[in-house]
Length: 347
Ligand code: NAI
Image (tube, rainbow, N blue to C red; front, side, top):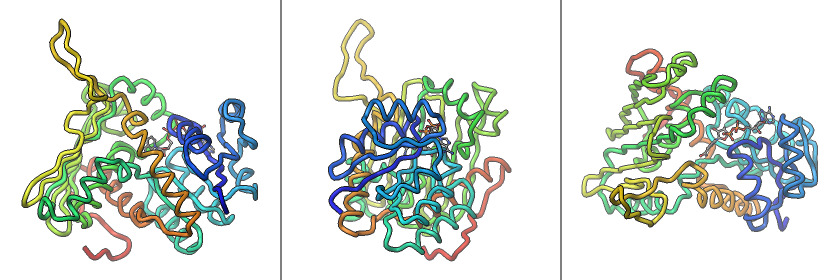
C-alpha cells in the first residue's frame, strides 16, 4: 500500500476540517468517501473537494472495498458502534474522542480493537501531538521538573460559541462537560503523571445560562482528582469564556513546573492603541490545534503504511472515559467518587 484511502463519517464542525486535511494536507493519504446523515453536507463536500463516493448511510460506506481506513468524526454516542463495524469489515480506524460515553461500550470497543491486532486503531487525543504539549512531555520524561505531583488544567470554550453549542446540546448528547471537554485534560494528566486516577470530586453549575440545568450539564465545572501514586489533578472546564478559547495546563513537579498556554495568545502580535496594550485570544479549537490535528493523522497514516502501532492506545481511550464518567457521576451526585476500573490497573 502506497497511500491510505480514507472514508470519513461526520462532516460537522471538526469532521469537515479533518476531511479537508486528509484530502489536501496529509501526505500519502486520499479521501475517497464522505458520509453524513445530512445529504447536503455530503453533496457539498463531494463538489467542493471532488470526492468520488458520498453516502448518507454509514453501513453502505463500509461496504466500499476501495477504502483502507475509516475516520470517525460523528457525534460521540456513535463512536463505539462505528469502530466495531469498521474493524469487523477489515479497515484501519481513526476515531475522534471520546472513545465512548458509557463504560460498557468503551470496553466492548476495546475488545474489538484487541481482537483485530493487524488493523491500526487510533484515538483523536490531538493535544499529545501539539508541539508545546509534546515538548513538556519530553521535559518531564527527562526528569527536568522532578516528579510531577500536580496537573492543573483549564479547558474553556469561548462564550461566542454558546448559542450553537446550546442548540447542538439540546438535540444531541455529548456526554456532558467532563466527558466531552475535560476528557482531553484527563488524558494529558494521566500521560504526564504516569498513573491512574483513584478518586474524583466534581462540582459545577449553570451560572449564567439556565439552559444547562435543563440538559443536566454544567456551564462551568471543576473536578479534583487523586491519582493512585498520590499526585493530584485539577480540571476546570467551561463553555462561557468571555475572552475566547482558553486551554492552559500547568504541571508542578518536585524540582520545577511547566506551564503551557498560560495566556492563550492568538499569535505574537501585541496591539498598542487608545485602549492601551493588548493581545488577542485564540478563537477556537480549529485555530489553536490546527497543526496537532494534522500531526495526529500523519502519525496514523504512517502507522498504517509501516505496520506499526500508535503509542496512543485504545486503553488510553477506555481509562480516560472511566475517569470522565466518574467525574460526571460525582457532579450529578455531589459525592466523592472512587473510580471503578472494570479490569485491574497497576499504577
Ligand atoms: P457536529 O455535530 O458538528 O457534526 C457531526 C456530524 O456527524 C454531522 O455531519 C452529522 O450530520 C453527522 N452525523 C450525525 N449522526 C450521524 C450518523 N449516525 N451517521 C453518519 N453521520 C452522522 O459534531 P462535531 O463538533 O464535529 O464533533 C464530532 C466529534 O468530534 C465528537 O465526537 C466530538 O467529541 C469530537 N470533537 C473533538 C474535538 C477535538 O478537539 N479533538 C473538537 C470538537 C469535536
